[in-house]
Image (tube, rainbow, N blue to C red; front, side, top):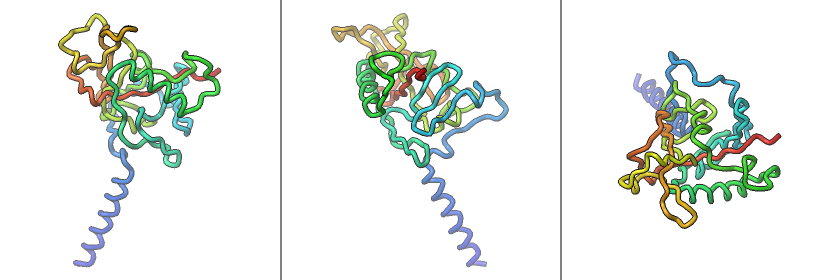
Length: 208
């Protein structure tokens, strides 16, 4: 009896160990009673660190900037990099293009890796899921606010200068704040953002 209990405990420990090694295995939670935000065939995993949205003709980075893509497991791991301003994110896009060579990218434009706008980023939201609010193909997404390049000038308020990602003019002066999507629940967040936790996902046009 005692030996059986020890054996069962060892089996449980092994299972828990495998779960821990699987990283984000239980991070994605979905409500099966809700209608999916998009069809299963909209996003095609290329198994190379990119995912194609065939409906909107966009190619997404599977991982957030700062995470590491593992080709063997086709998964993302590690901590995402935090961004405070549009200038920082734009520089990251250029570096991202060097890390992930783009034979089809001859200049800055839709065919190069770039920061998504609010409309594009919102297409990744899966309303039936939370923590993070994405579909299975993006299950390793951190449950954090993600930056867009869409300004929200009308909502600009100096009181938010310490906790909202800002875009600036050519002289470095603050012009306003950027619209952000929180992928914990898919909501658009405008206030109370921790500047150390704004993540970024790159996008580009699917090459013709």
